[in-house]
Amino acid sequence: MRKFGKLFLGAVIGGLVGSGLALLFAPESGEKTRTEIEGYFKNFKDEIIRAADEKRAELEEQLQKLRSGQDVPLEEKKG
Image (cartoon, rainbow, N blue to C red):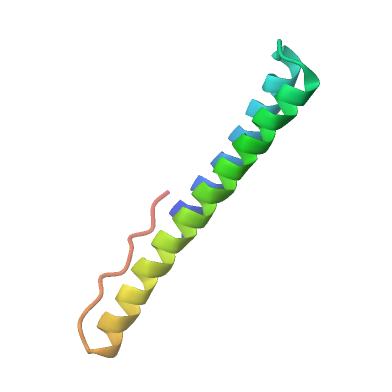
């Protein structure tokens, strides 16, 4: 869970910084810039949904293993 939290936080911070820089240095018209920003946030949302789906699938697999009596290794705590 910590890995996903760090990934999510990094993506949010990177998105905000990138958006701010894009607005400051954009040589395009406002309409084109808005269209690009909308595309960026759509891609960002899709990436978050994909990451959540992957994590959900991983957790469901672990749950099935636990229910069937198999050992499931715990993630090691880092840092």
